[in-house]
Image (cartoon, rainbow, N blue to C red):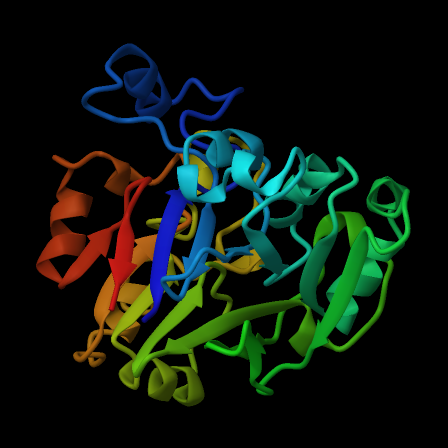
Length: 301
């Protein structure tokens, strides 16, 4: 059995974004029943037992834990405990790792990451808050294309992407295929791909997608110049590692030949018009056979 639940589905900053007064954010604030707020992307996986594994650690993690009983401590197990058995990191981006600092209350943690992502985080003095007592933090190195196992039941295979490190770590050098990864998750004969950041689509990735029962794919932006429509001087989507959904070279077109799996967009930016369920962009996504995941979306096989 493989179960994945999305506790948040938004890109960094959430929806509505704290400093944004665009039409979408304003509508979400004034009419939240029409455009529900979204927390920043956070996934939790399990195999049906009591252990839970986080994929990344969002800045909204504390709130997400308090809204998800399966992640909360049990009084029957003492005053300090957690069902969170490990955290798998797909990058060192702040909206994927800041939640680690919210887990600093002397709780032993196991974190799975590539050597480069680990090195980026270990150079940050804030991360020393996770090393205040012996064995508080245990790193498990993972290697692109090499399968590892979570609790002997969930097989994870990192998918390497050629990507750059986040801006705060731009002075570090390392293997570009370790900066950002996707994951193939397998258990009980089911297979899912989790790719929240997608800088490229190649033949190898197409083969992975076609072998899956479900694929969760980067849906950050609808168009390449989307940010510039509300924030002058901001970068293009592709320049910061996100293929937009639309266009002849966008995700929908590039993956139109992928027929087998359930196709789901995640990591939706506050500027993306697909947030509006009545928009022509949302209709185009759904007509192409895609789903836009909402907070609480769950897949179990």
